[in-house]
Amino acid sequence: MVSVLSDARDRGFLGPGPVQDQMERSLGFLAFANSGTQALDLGSGGGLPGLALAMALPACCWYLVDSNQKRADWLRTAVASLGLEGRCQVVCGRAEQVSRTPLRGTFDLVTARSFGPPAATAECAAAFLRTGGDLVVAEPPTGASGRWPATGLELVGLAMGGNKVIPTAAGPVTLTRLVVTSVCPDKYPRRVGMPFKRPLF
Image (cartoon, rainbow, N blue to C red; front, top):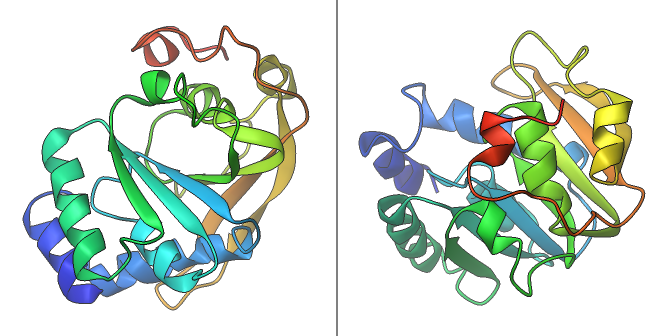
């Protein structure tokens, strides 16, 4: 796994920090991401947290979504090299479009690490989740305070499920859990780019 992620870092798909530390922080998602059988990682890029969680949760099937063709091609190679082909699929496309496919409303869990600002992440992720599903988001070092207003989350059928500071071997990680309370309205997510250009909150 470390050699695969090192290749991702060398290609610029991961940040410049030590790969082992980045992987350890991604495994912090296990504090929330330890249930369900269908999961999706938004903006998988260099494979974190998606590949690390797929390795750690052998009973779970994963979809890794990334809009960049080069990153998606790399992810497919990484999935094969890690022996995950049977339960890990790579989808190249924008989340706003992929969520309009039969994948809509089918996932127990969606994860996001550096995907985008809170409003865009919530809008793009909500449509993938079934009722009762969870969105788990890695927060910036400044924490989660004020980033997830209840009135904004309600628009896409989400509510705050709590946040935790998770200790890892590479230092603490702050994660927020958002829960689906109602089906995401058909009008969300809006067309490509709109969740980022005109955030809901």
